[in-house]
Length: 443
Image (cartoon, rainbow, N blue to C red; front, side):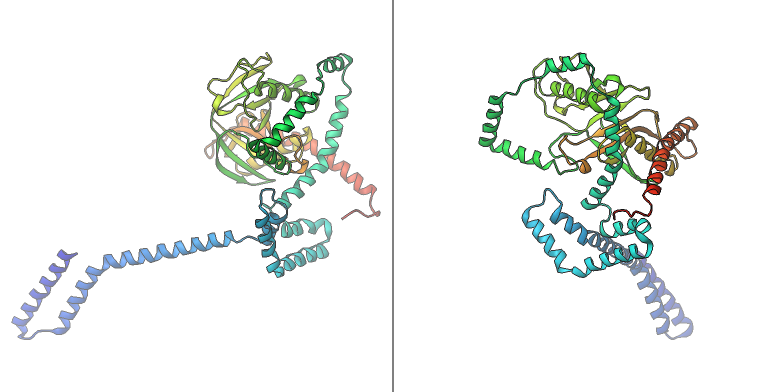
């Protein structure tokens, strides 16, 4: 600072004067030293600022370099955009395809690596690494493969569920027959004419058609939530979400069953309420997801989220079996899975969720491990392997070393129960493998 500089210069003059009186000669070396010290004192703050700015600039360049590398798309991502993305424009598809063709060496290198891994390790041990190389996680192609893999277990379970339901009783059949409505051809013709003349409805129809291929449909209102963190441990990825309060229309499921005919019956009743079968005749917009919740005692309920515009004062339902429920803010652990919902798949996902939470160090524990929900986002006509489902469980975050023994025991019980479900499948698959040994298997 100027004050420090003046002080140093004054000391220098005083020292020089004393030396002149005693030695009768000035020392140029001493003056230069004192001037150097004064310059260092004055320049020190500026040097610190300069070094700090240089370090910050270096960190910024490193961060920008990381972002730039992350923004560079792989050939798999570009091929996804060109061939599998529903929302990409023709120009975007062509541009991404050209980018892939401009660098064929990257494609050849990855394909060669995958082929070599299969050749060295065999298909059984080498195909996971080959799949990671050709279709990395995060790509649409990888999601499709995982969905198709899930369907291999789910489809036989759907058939078994339908067989277990059996045929409808004579009274149920006569009742449902009496409630069937005839097809109104005039109404269908009017709807088609309206669609042909209304550009807004044409756009809505186009978007709804694209939902056949979308994993998560566009244009449907969902509850607001914030992702607190993502837990990547054990057999999958779990999102920890904090949901804002919302309101649902809820109906108990007949026979406590969330699959088969009872699920369709509950859906129709709730959809009728949402589309105008209520005290005010108000037609509300469809929302997402549809929730089937289980309370741990064999009872199940289906819920539709009400649009936010009607959450504060929703119209009363005409159907007595429907109740309106305010859902408070809550912390929820959510694990996504593709395909169709079966009881076997729900058991596997519950076990996987419990295992992830355990591998995370029990920092998150279920409020009640026997209570959970299945969230379904897609319309019935979405491709089965692209359907998005989620298993959700209300949880609490716990401080380290304060894990509840009761909650931990409940999680352990889920893992043991799931093991009982999975082990027979494994034995059956081993028997099938032994039966087909020597006959060859499809690649």
